[in-house]
Length: 102
Image (tube, rainbow, N blue to C red; front, side, top):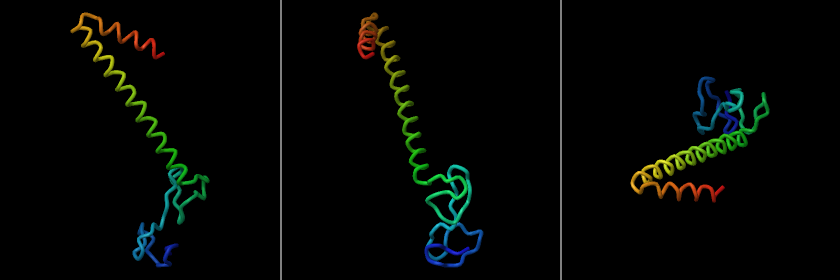
């Protein structure tokens, strides 16, 4: 297999060029098709950079949602503990502030 960057001949089993360490094969993240160049898949047409950016955006969105769920659970637990300690006043304030936010 010939390296597209430096022209070095490499064995087919090798993943990176032995001379310049450039990748010899790229795997499409969408369909797992292997090809000798990056940028866009020959089989499904997916653009590698856009696909990776989409995956990162999805992961960030899921992390944000997870943080929000955890934050809401902690707020509710805090209010339950404070309700026990203060005789329910903090729980009333909490529900009033939540109603004003919505």
